Image (tube, rainbow, N blue to C red; front, side, top):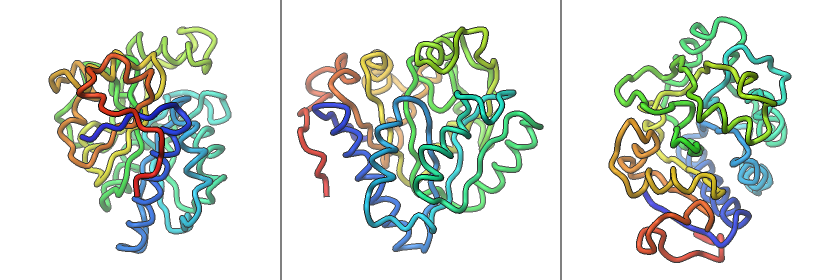
Length: 257
């Protein structure tokens, strides 16, 4: 896992978008298509805004898979991740092939069906974040590091549900669904590249545990330490609890290529 800390959230988002764009273009050049996994949430908004505006990507050759979705939430609910991806990525970029997780109707069947599509070929690049409880996708602690199933039905813990309220998606914890469809940890790790975008001081403790702690299901995103194709993008707030040696130089430019 590589770590890059930028001077502010905007620069961090542009840098991550540039890396994502290059991964997509390289996959299209080498294999004729790019298979991507996309995350959602407030932490990903600036990144997706920069990515969809990046020139030179033939989005008609991109196939997108959904990282996670609440069970029982209507697709038009403000917190629906299907709604989010359609508005912030799919329609803006013009992606013709996408696989969204419908958590309203037969979640187990949806998880199996989309999982088969996902398992048909390798993922070129996965976009992920880290939760305040260090979750990866909706794999809350203690996460399942063993199963090879592409998608799981998971139960959300209280810390995860409180985060969704704090970010403004729901009025109260009682309104947050208790279960979700989530891509499994092992499936995420199968991506050739992982771009992990984590701004905000609310994530600082989780980031520190994931980067400087031991790899443990109690800190789900710590598993990214084992993936050599992962790059973690931070701003000064999310990197605040890291040691200076780990955090490294704070970069003022998003030019990596």
